[in-house]
Amino acid sequence: MAKRNTFKTLKDGVYLARCRESSLLAAASNGHSIIWPEARMVIKGDTAYFYHEGKKVWSCNMTYAANNFDVGALAE
View 1 (cartoon, one colour):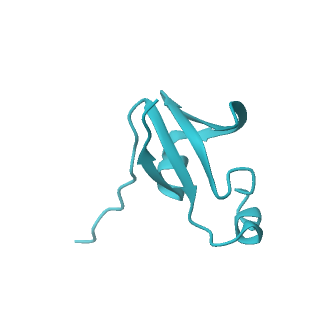
View 2 (tube, rainbow, N blue to C red):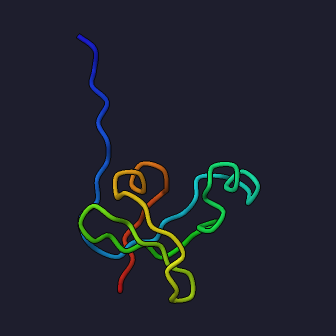
């Protein structure tokens, strides 16, 4: 029997999201240039909000964020 793919999820909270790409150009090719190299991320329900210098710069689905960025807890 094949193993099912499971997706990571995140609870509501404040996190630090780091791009997995090694350069700004690579991040841009994946649509993550506004986040590169890292951004403060706030999870509320099913949405991830990304902030730079206190300004919201992007939002996406929480599951997408959890599975496409390296995410660590961030004290608020």
